[in-house]
Length: 513
Image (tube, rainbow, N blue to C red; front, side):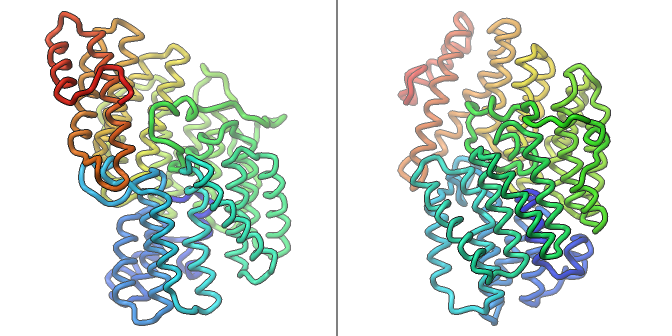
């Protein structure tokens, strides 16, 4: 579910029928084969399972070993999608060295140029292969690209691509699966720009089209999307609930936008929601589509949490999440399992369950998964979801729970080897301690944030392509955390240490650069 349940389902539909419903069986069948076609199929299976790094390796091997033009084109297309899945939600990331989330800068423009240049070099392909290459490289990443765009000049080409895709859809020359994928991506883009009314109308048309085509699973996906639109009030929580990586910025300034909102269209009777029943879930269960069942259960948990009073036990949403985790596990969907684990840890904090070391270990394991086999940006988004939960509890005055949420985030970022994000979590913890008790209580955590930002800053090369903007932002964070430390630590040894490090970097405390 690395691209969310919608696009991930389309990618599964492109697998052979005997593989699409059970990724674990598919991986076992294909593992060990060195045939280019089998390597390509293994990469597709691993990508659908959320094992992005292993998928990219399989695609690279298939691309290098392929003798057929069709296999080489498909392997190249999927390899680029896997690379984007690993770093795409983090706007300017590309391969590099530590600190990982600073050096791995990937710009939308550079990614698009590289992808389009590669695509122009392809020879003429059979219609079915051309459509799959086109969907994988041009359509499937559109929602993530739009979520990462920060200026009109970046978003306008994306809408032009969607308009061209709509024209191909209207022409009727697309295969049923690719046509379904185009319709879903169109609705998801409308949702992401907060055109929820238009997205809902488009989803209703999608349901009608799927009924005409005899595609009940497609109908279920559009029904799930309508439930999603009815459940969430803000774009970013929608993305993190089911997409997790689609966040527009990695800075602390957007954490408020990540908080859970109330349901914009609450139903008159919450019984079906609380029990986890829905039209989408029924369709998915009838056809044994476990990724859809898991997504429907995760959404039911989110809707229940939004509906119930803050002091009401989380019995129903925890039950939904546990069932969703089991469902994703049976489906072989590692990304879905990590998302549900994150939500379960948040629910345990909200219910004041004892905070134990094993919870920090679980959060750390999410980060390790993102670093070693899964999607880096996806795992990073889950870490920021912990921080968002902490912000929500802080607003309610529940500072102890908020601090524990920052500790979960720090554990995840540590496993992910994301030092700047880890410094973000330390700064958040310091601010919580200082606001809830005394400023001196926040000094150790703020010191960790300050030193973490400096370590990342000194590891960077501002003259390197794509790194100057990140270098400037890091200097700003050093200046801001340094100013807080100086204000809090007068009379403490840390005051002289902070002043000396700021002078060594020629940074004025509190300055913007």
